[in-house]
Amino acid sequence: MWYRVFANTAQIPDPDVVSEGIRRHFSHMHFRFFADEEGWVEAELRDPVENLKWTLRRYCQKADDIRGELQSWAAWIEGQPASPHQQILMERIMTAQQVFTLEADENPVGERLGQIVARLLAHVAEGV
Image (cartoon, rainbow, N blue to C red; front, side):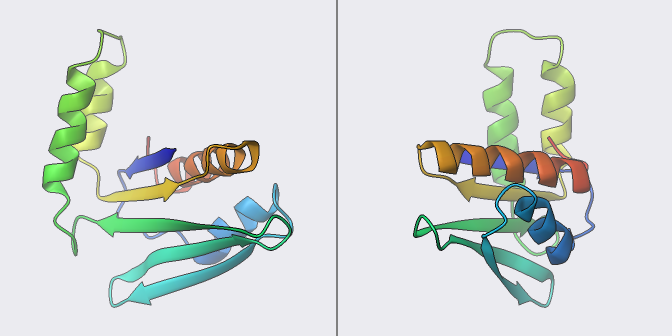
């Protein structure tokens, strides 16, 4: 199951804030962040109790060419049944400065982790 957050701020979420936000729900989780000159681009999340591992990726408008992906997701939203939130959601996606992705296992641990990570990143990065 894929989780995506389209963030409207270019501010890179602090790895400590991300780690601590997840640790509130998964106290045993281990983290490793990988960075380049633009900031962190990937985080490895490891659950040593369940022996599971996930990869959280960060793509930014400045360093990565994500315009095509943003247009594709906005078009997908446009093709969904009408909703009062549809237009604003399409606009938020089209103007995103960063996109975060997490592929989580389709099990209770993975689904809970995906929801927590998505909500956390949406909050700290002004995303949807």
